Amino acid sequence: MTAPEKRRFPITLRALQVTAVTDLSPRLRRVTLSGPQLAAFEADGRTHPGFESLGPDDHVKLFLPDPETGALSLPVQGDGRLHWPQDPPAISREYTPRGFDPASGVLHIDFVLHGHGVAGAWADRVKVGQVLHLGGPRASVLVPQADAYVLIGDETALPAIANWLEMLPDDATVTAHILIEAPEARIDLRAPKAAQIHWHGYDATDAQAMTRLIPEVPPRGTYIWAGGERAAITALRAHLDGADLDPHQLDLSNYWTLGAAAEED
Image (cartoon, rainbow, N blue to C red; front, side, top):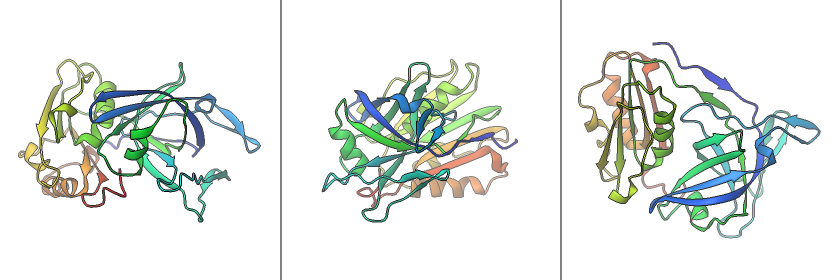
């Protein structure tokens, strides 16, 4: 299996407006963003390119106000990169774009409402009309060619899994395992016609939860993507590292760390 194609983009800071807030479930909130800076725009004496997100697991940095003071510290765009302030430092969190429609100029970001974290607290209170600054993505990793796909993730990976299912061809062979802490976290997903989607209740302290979902390692030709809590991803990686797999057929991402949830989202 060859490495997935990667497209790189100039890093760009954008100011966007919240145009809609929609609860997809009691635990998942969609924030819809729009504004002229999603298209190419002029600033700082140069033309910045329009927003692009072509992969299922892209990442953008959201710049958020200090939850105690309400002050917002932003990096400065210059020399093709972002210059980060030191005092006060910028507060940012990485999120996966859930969907971008350049024709209508709309970008969606989905937030897990878990009751903690800077971004989660912001999403709890967000109102239409607010401005959100974001940077990136720096790059997109495109959906690779494979005989079959296995997707594994917890609730924080739901946006990426949903993107995967929508970007795969309709005749793709794909199995998705989604770990949720409460039944109400389930949402409707658009997927290839033969997709197998399994929802599993689990305890986030169970580091073996992902590994148990694939006791038999999938054969070569199967692309495996997983995202979730660090210990669970580490255990899954150890399970798969012992098999005769092509390194290009694996993409495992740490999304958050148990015990550090107050600082992470």
